[in-house]
Image (cartoon, rainbow, N blue to C red; front, side):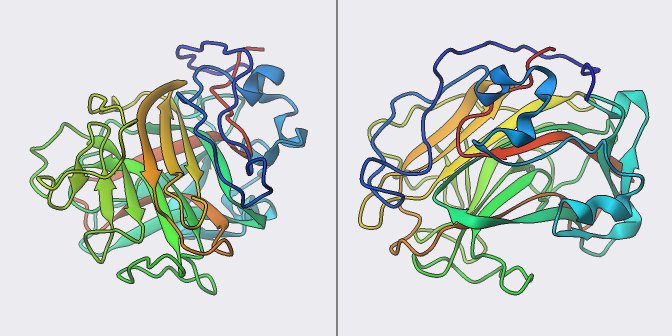
Length: 326
């Protein structure tokens, strides 16, 4: 672990919760409105430097990438990794957030679609998950158009290890979110790496290949159509991270109670809420539960070789928050 090489703002929040793996009526019971999402440090406050966080009973999975001799060892903790020749365990100080090692994905110059990833199945499956990780884009990143370049959390989107793109969610088959950055094909909508957003497959999706939710409430495609995030939705400014800078990203996915619109997706950067999407219908049956998460760097094409790094990954039943200094 060690002391992080780049500390960003950390604010400790006493008694932070906001979610959990169910309500008072059991694991699939109603999710009461917990009010504003927590900020600052959550589980991480009990584990300065993330030391011992993987053994916390609230934690599902943790990886600081310190235990690997090479990328081939990733499968000792993760279930799969893809594009093995483009995945590396980085040891250079600027490319590691904490400790001595981090995960590195390379996107080469290509006219063909490439997707680097590490993925993990969740067992037992859950209704609510929080997923925190540190990440940094290389300064050369300029991918435009469709690019999955952050994290993914999903329910039954992967069948026998295979993704199911282009098959809409219908309330019984699957749902998926990806916490990532987006630029249009021309790259003119935002500076690189693009607007932070949630890419989502859900039963009310507007496009067969999924929608994008933005912090200000826009839903793409057809942003002129109002969102359906309900009266408690708070519009927030669009957020574009800086290149060549580490951030703590966290996303919460809460499946709705079937028949209710109490699903929710909340996004944090450095312990501050940058987007919160309540009033969601993600499923119509309670057997559709969260079973998978991943990290990725994907593009349909790329003009300039670039890299992205990930470090200090934690998945949990409760809010995690940024790492607290030891």
